[in-house]
Amino acid sequence: MEVFRIYKGEGEYFDLGQLPPYRQCFSFGGGAARKSGYCIDPDKCIGCQGCRIVCPAGCISASFPRSIDTAHCLHCGNCYRICPAGAVERRDG
Image (cartoon, rainbow, N blue to C red; front, side, top):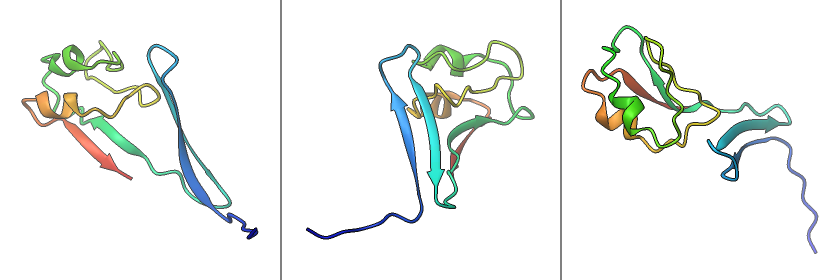
């Protein structure tokens, strides 16, 4: 048996047992948790509600300008694909 040690890293906890699902990023040993997923640029958002309609997790705010609750986002990309103004942006950490 070989012994090993993890010095630093990052990960993601994803609980599909809740509605809406819950997501949490974490890091350890000096690693940095990357922010990924989607965000909405308030300067580009036109308030059409297309993103809210197609979001299966219901994590996009009703208030204008829209925002995404990243703890519940499934990263499905529906909002990104449907936005006519290009206000939804992908973050790749």
